[in-house]
Amino acid sequence: MSRAMRGVTLIELMIAVAIVAILAAVAYPAYTSFVAESRRNEAKKELSTLTVLQEQYYADNASYASSLAALGLTAAGVTTYNSESAYYTISLTASAAASTYTVKATAIGSQLNADSDCRSFTINEQGAKAAVNASGSSNPECW
View 1 (tube, one colour):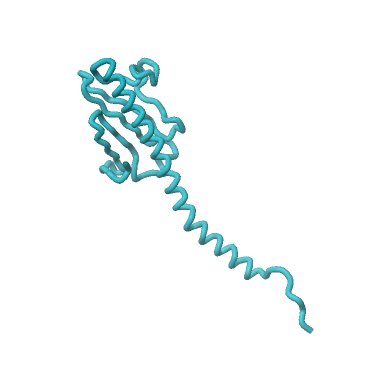
View 2 (cartoon, one colour):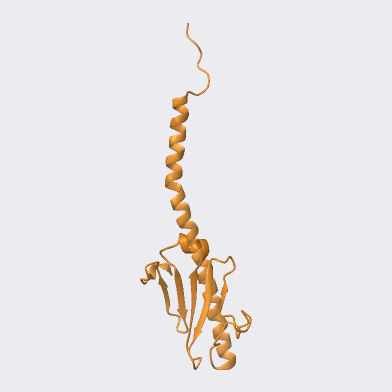
């Protein structure tokens, strides 16, 4: 007499679990890398916004703003602010004569740990862009 087969054997179940585990092991690092890379756009957006604000300020005052407060982004005396989702700290450095400036976005929190390739971004009044990785080396691929 042959018995009709019903259900799933333990071996079949273990094979299915192993396949799912392999797929997850491949997909998760790719996903986290994609998320960290997509968060870089927040830093780039903030720096682009600051560059536009500086150029508007220059058109009105014949010099660049020497602080974030002069641009209306922070209270007087506050030198940094966090980006919208708080993955980057934004700062502004201006020359004494306010003829040059550099804005910088530095990764903080979970982005600091997730993105070692592009830890900070800078852009200056000439539009020169730079990025630095976790070891302090320049990484032009970030922009």
